[in-house]
Length: 111
Image 1: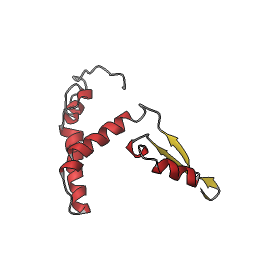
Image 2: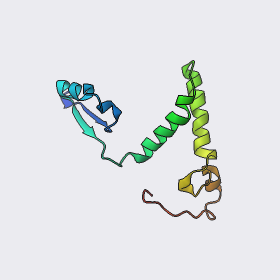
Image 3: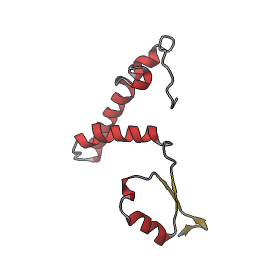
Image 4: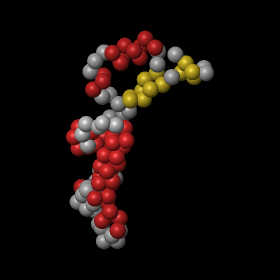
C-alpha cells in the first residue's frame, strides 16, 4: 500500500489493541510499515491520557460534541492551572508559575 510512491507507515505503542491478532494481521495483509514507540518514551503522554480518561471521559456521558468540548476544556483548565502536581513539589501550576524564585523542586529522573 503506497501513496504517491511512498510507503505508508504507522507509529504506535504496544497497547491493548495488540492483545488481539486483528491489527498484526491487517498490518501483514496490507504491508504497512509498523513502528513501535520505545518503552518508556511515551510515559508523560500515557499518564496524561490515563488521567483524562479516568477523571473526565469515564465520568461523563456526552450528549453532543459541543458538550464534550466544554467539559474537556474545563478539565484541562483545572489540570493545567489549579490542581497540585507532584512534579511541581505539590504546587498547582498557577502558583508555581507566579513564584519562580521561591519554588525549589528537585528534578526527578524524567526531568
